[in-house]
Length: 210
Image 1 (spheres, one colour):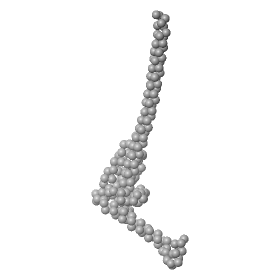
Image 2 (cartoon, rainbow, N blue to C red; image 1 turned 180 degrees about the horizontal axis):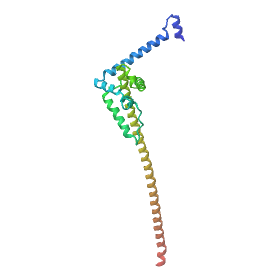
Image 3 (cartoon, rainbow, N blue to C red; image 1 turned 45 degrees about the vertical axis):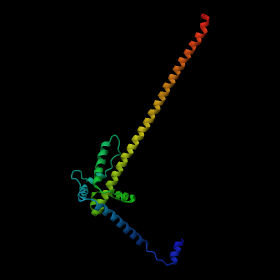
Image 4 (tube, rainbow, N blue to C red; image 1 turned 180 degrees about the vertical axis):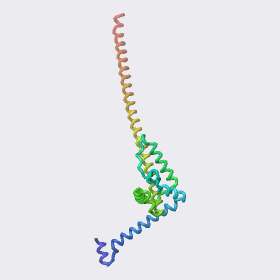
């Protein structure tokens, strides 16, 4: 409130909100353009050609490699692990060709990945080449990272399951060992009792015999 009063007193004229919004939009577009150009400049001509071929639609399936790449693969399970491994290998092969996106802020890379996911091959073709290949690069990188996270998750769950099974087996072993020890103690007690009774009987009958 005090700041607003001070602005009024100093007769400072603020720009219109529409002007501020346009300025912010222009700044954001310039920043995004810089991100696109930075990724594009790190792509070799051969990789750019491969990305372009990924957008080509096949005659028989009427879909592009890009559309197939965007298809969600089921989470890895013992029943579809081969399919998931093939999907992961395909993504990893692309990652070996594509530049890193680690310099991008996480919020930016996530936004760009969502934008790329919402576009089919025809929509991507309508974009400038810098933005087109940059969005494809970011999406493939993010999808590969997610696939690795899924693999790590199933490994963690598997190890946790093995740990729980090991604890259960150890508990069962301890119970069985305890049961065996108790059985041995009971047997030993019976033997000791029988021995003591025999010794006592011998002491009682020996004077009578003599």
